[in-house]
Amino acid sequence: MPICHSCERILDRDRGDAPLWDSIYRGDHWDLAHAYNTSWLGWLVLVLRRHVEAIADLNPDEAQELGLLLRQVSRALKKQTGCSKTYVMQFAESASHLHVHFHVVPRMPKQAPEDISYKVLRHLGVPLNERSSESELNAFAHALRGHLSESRL
Image (cartoon, rainbow, N blue to C red; front, side):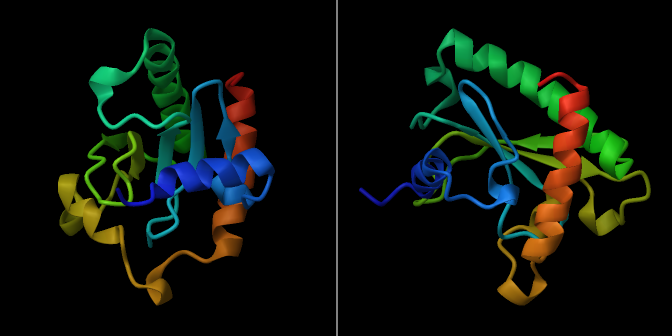
């Protein structure tokens, strides 16, 4: 079985070894991080803190917290980015990311047609030289924490 990248990152967060952008918020059951391999600033990921590979296997507390977090994270993204709504995607299909996680991506009001709907995925898994820098990710994470705290998370 391949090593679960999500579980490795959760262990880093547990040890306090994660950068700010990778540990924006930690709930009882979910962690909020910025995606590391994207050129789209504001591309967030909600990661279940225990290893589960299918949404149907969430327990009631995990499912309840997820629903509340999706709403609060979307509100915080709207405050920070001015997005008109958020895209929420869940696949958990990559060999190293079978772990349940949700992508929460700001959909901007004047977003280019080539980035509408599923086409926004072209901004994920981009080469290193196209990714948002660590300083950009940390600055974004810091500001987002402020918006989340206003939402009483």
